[in-house]
Length: 353
Image 1 (cartoon, rainbow, N blue to C red):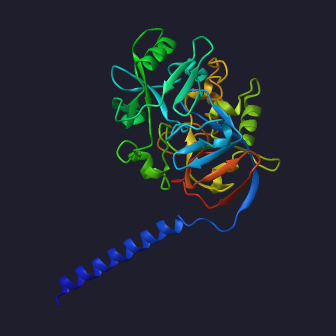
Image 2 (image 1 turned 120 degrees about the vertical axis):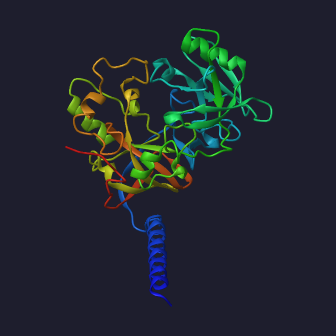
Image 3 (image 1 turned 180 degrees about the vertical axis):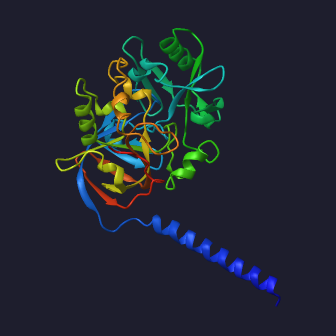
């Protein structure tokens, strides 16, 4: 055997060994912990059926890989398919680009509820109730909606009546906007559009994503962190709902921003994985109860002084984006358990002062 062949074989063996070690480490990271530490209780559960719409407060929820879903005992009826996730999105008729309360704050007042097993009821204080039949893809137009960073996401159009209602409420016109529905038949692929953050946050994958959520299936906020923020602001009070969390954790011994260091979280039957700190935008400055935008840019103004991410975005942070690793039922009052690890900057990039 020649020297060149020996070198090639050695190089190949080294490559195989390195690959094996990498796969082992990836699998090792995914092993659910055996030991847990109780840190608080589940104090709030929010469901957002419409992207940028008003929340539904739940006492109990099914936590699926796409996010929270109402359980049958939360309402007299339950919608078929995926209809209890963040499964509705408003988009432009002209270019199929999504629309949110960042541009149209009045969207935060839109309430979506279950009417019966086939219809949603959509309400705002100034208009008649809209009844939206859950569309079926074989009978309705299918589209691809452009979300953040140009990501294209599947949608089934909800029809002309819904389009007219949303156009009149948001734009004051008869046309211009449409309503899309996701039946959870297709998963997201953020490999190309979100490559920079995927490279930086090593626990974040396509499996972490929700349907029309900005990124992940579940957003968790520590109420102690919000109280600390309000103490720093001093002159105003920001609600935990300004941050649009799905899950809120609280407890007498819970320290502010402790969630930054949580790796795994267990609530009821559910196990979550912290995949990324949640970076924040102008949406947090909108009061979710009256659509008013804060004149002083709070809470962003204060967060920017001590809670900037080290990640690619360099935005202020509050709360953590979570992937659902084990599905199940969670309810208010459930103890919240965590398992810590020494998180690298690629997992959690927050600067704290």
